[in-house]
Length: 196
Image 1 (tube, rainbow, N blue to C red):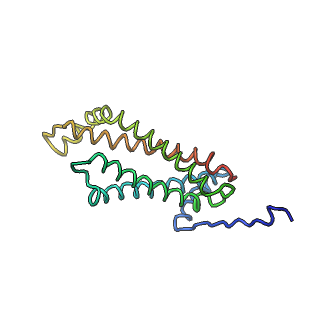
Image 2: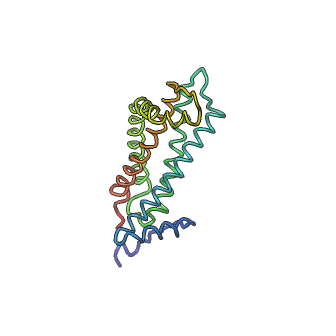
Image 3: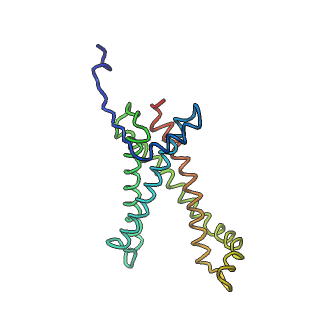
């Protein structure tokens, strides 16, 4: 009996109602179906994480970490950090047990560290992108959409604040898509590279 025969690895796989539709879509991709299945599961987990992130931030700012003077900068940073950590933790657990249930050659601590690092890099890149793009993107979209907006609200004159909010949301959306692809590929080929 070899050492690997005597070690039994307990594999936990999570099943849920989304498995059926995800498998139905992924099977259409032939030999790439397993990777498509993983990507769709990863994207679903990312969506859940985004809800946890935004929901936690909203609740914390509406209750115990309200962004008011004094220390509003600290409270915003703390609430944002708590929300980010909860979302990354949720994403890691779901990805370990649902997206990549066959990945167990590394310790959970090592995989969590790798996953958190990749998530942080994605968050950092997304934050830089949003901070640098929201003004010009809001201005461009504001000018592009102004005729349609004025059809619904005659006499509407866009404010700098409205353009900044529009640009922030547009940059956030683009950033989420880019970070989704980054996180999937980096985790697939580094954190969970032990799956076939």
